[in-house]
Length: 316
Image (tube, rainbow, N blue to C red; front, side, top):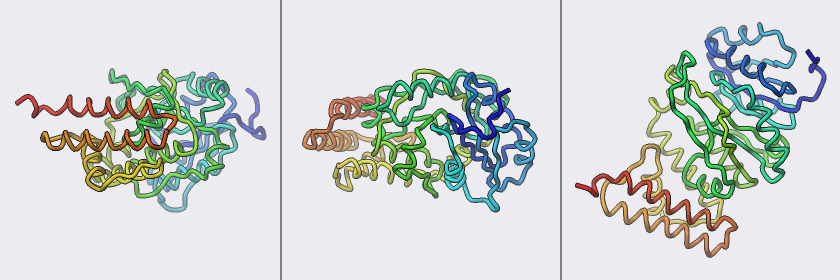
């Protein structure tokens, strides 16, 4: 095997680890089996209380670099530390329990090499259970980068462990994961990235996302539902404001009600309020002559239809 110890890698895969002893070896093995082999794996252990650090250290491959936080700092700090240590042209994100299909890194590198206008790319995702069995769930991504820019105003558009970005882009704009986001760190990061560059997806499964075993996202969803809703509402508000939109508190309130996770409308007044808020976004997009105006129009129409379609009270 080629000695990569002193070479500058093409890809840096960054993995925050906390109590990942059960799955981290499988995650790393899925990377070692990639068709593209020019990479480094940067694992930062966030003061785990299990044997995660020892498991990683036991894997003999000089492309694996493992570091430890002296005390538990949280996932945002740990991801940022891993990114700061990256040397590759591209940074690929993973969690300590995910699996990458063997073609993932090559697929994303080829895409970014062929699309200079794109700064960050993700892909489709399949769910697997705690034993690695496919759960027959396929998440298909949005592909059009202009539509992604429109959609991200009111919703996440990436499966986190499928994403690869240009390191130069991240460093140029000082993009960092933020603390206290209650599991929505990735959504805020992608939203802020969309302010400076173009984001896209590939219509290929690039992530097998493990669920049903008490992972970090699931724990946060159970323990911090209200706090997470507030965070997502703030991301929506920041996304709209930083893209030049100016909405009233009432308009923001109905948007956050509708587009919170599992958000629903309860009466005809809320349906009308949502329609008016989305029309405000469209009107302001027209006034700003945004280059993704058509995508804003389509997004508003589709998302309104999505919520009306679930407003079952209309059929009582």
